[in-house]
Image (cartoon, rainbow, N blue to C red; front, side, top):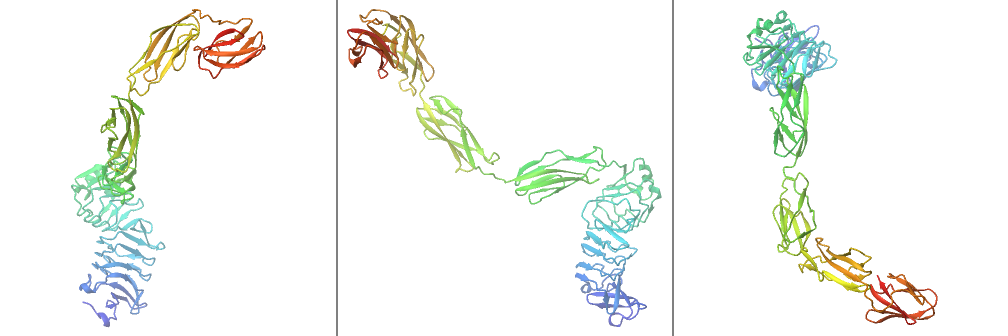
Length: 596
């Protein structure tokens, strides 16, 4: 029964409401003090009276100093967003925030006493507990509440993110209700623990491993129903080597079906290498925990950039959007890590260019040549091409770029991207008629010294593209031959004149016999008229016994040159004359000479 409720509150134990909160008078002298309390003794009787939203507890209420947050003060106030505790508060009682949806709470410097029961039990949304750095009694480490020396573990937020938790080695006392209904799947207890409080792991149904490093388990003080609600057939107890039997014969621990010696994980590796995948594609990474016989081989996966790539609990990576992400595999036991880099490229990479190369620029009729096309970029999604010929009469091309020559002419072969028809490449190919044979109009020839004769080379077929012929003599001292097949007999003997086709290197030969038959014309120098050198190239020098008119005739008797000759040595330029046999005449003397 409440005394002096609301407006008439004036005695210790009386309650009154000020603002959004209810208060209970705890002291009148020497100081007027109150604590925050619920409307009823065990919470709120009226839903509408429950505080909600962001609540800031004042330092005073109706002239009373607010020094405590009492039992069940905010019990089941599920619409609370935050609570700010003033520096006037020195004590927080049990269940004060139970069944609220607070995600975070900060304990100020002034709080030096927490109730015997966890004030934050059943706070399933609570992810962290913070403590002012200068608080003399309490501290927080990674969101978990301890006494200042970290000897006592006081409260573990039930909503804290993370599947595994390792209790610090400094802890000797684990208070009651610490891990009540937490989401943990694995917990490690250090060897220094000497007591574990009532219902410590109450309702921790997701626990699959408890790693206990306690060597002397029989000396540990165990509270009531420490493991209540843990599936004993599914949760494995891992203990120091040689201590399995001790645990199997110790109350509460012996209730578990699986108690084994603990072999810690020492490392982790991923079988696959760094990879590049396209948007929408996926690949699975396989993690391997070392050693192979480690007790706990479970692994957690995470992505550094989920907008680019996500990873599920089985290591399956799914490409979301262009970018890169580092995929990390973390052992549940020991937190060992390894990574792989994933690069996500567009699902469709368009063709930006095409080039064509060929080993030949010309191909003979009925022959083939393989053209090669390259698409850029090299990782384009669709690299297929359509090949076409500008004139199928000249050449055709198949789907793989193999060209078959059909007729004489120049043809343009085009490769066009099917992905991006605006991108193509062309190659100009000449189809030619090859030389199949060469024949001379004479295979044997007799010629006198100084005479000339022109051989004619016939190329087959008549429409061959390249009819060029190369002429050679087997002996320049007997007979020469120019680029047009003109033979000049130099000296008595036999020589072969060879005609070779430029296309195909086909040959034919003519055997030429040179004789010394007299022509009635002097072809040697005398004291009256000398001409040298003979044969000549650009010109020659004459010497005569007396001046006269020098005349030069061809074999047809046509006079080609007439000029005065002196009795001295005189150079005569005949570079303009064609190759052949000519006659130089002066003062009734004639000398035959050969123009090369």
